[in-house]
Length: 379
Image 1 (cartoon, rainbow, N blue to C red):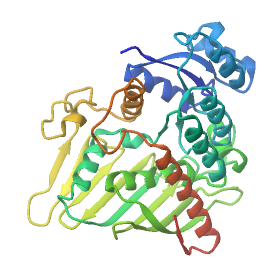
Image 2 (cartoon, one colour; image 1 turned 180 degrees about the vertical axis):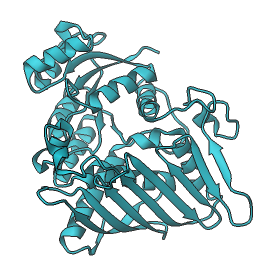
Image 3 (tube, rainbow, N blue to C red; image 1 turned 45 degrees about the horizontal axis):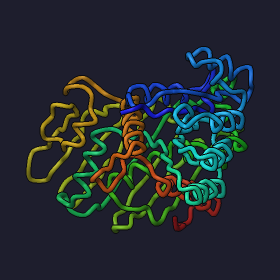
Image 4 (spheres, rainbow, N blue to C red; image 1 turned 135 degrees about the vertical axis):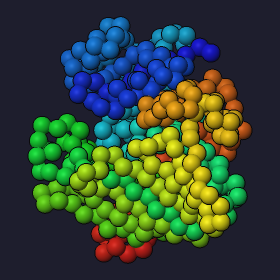
């Protein structure tokens, strides 16, 4: 399969997520970084391009320049997809322009800084007929996909309760905002949007709930808080209700001291409870009332896993795969579909436009509920 040629917007010197995307695409093996507009500063953009080995004539000083010049190249030479890894407030304009210029898009979550901008991206997708994938990373983990198959098959019975938390401590001190590029834009509502922790990591937690259960969060009651001197939430919790009748709790915080990156989910069905934790992603526990607890392991040689799930794993059992490989699975599957592959699963293997808009509605509902005194609101 000819690798998908892509150009990156953002992700230059000092950026975190750009390097993750490039590494994931390389692991996936069916993508090739061909061009880039890696910074809003032209000099930094060109220096960043040189550092990662892009040819000088495919490093651009701005994303409009990249889209214009790439579109003018022969079809066999120009980029096919634009990867957008900028702060949230810079998602909509390049995404819409890329779609209208004839490029497909892969974009980091959340889809945009506001629900209005997210809808504008969705309108551009519908108008142009181009394809878009959103990188909700944790759905790329093999055991998360296996959990979805087990729960949605109905073999455990109805989903009764879900408990999901995503807690970190990297913003727990006032000093964490000093000379910290990642903190600077994530805590600035002009760049991040109106939500802080709930937009940054709460969306991952909500997406994981809907992905594994196959149900929608329909109602939510949230309380978002922040440390003194902060402009947007760095901590919060919510009650929610699922479309199938189940209930749940969701916590998202970046000030929980001692928690590094603790995303964990517990799903209690009528006949079994399923438990997965991102910091130990290669094991999943399934508990029963009248039979022994099961520990499931990831690994390409674990015959009890579904064949399509074994196929996305690169190592034998006991050789851990993690965050980068999960990211790579999203790139791999999206790349295959861009090349015409089809999937028999209901889920395409990555967050769709509908999933991304669900994430934006989750943010809006959490903010509305909290501002109104933690009342119940519809999603």
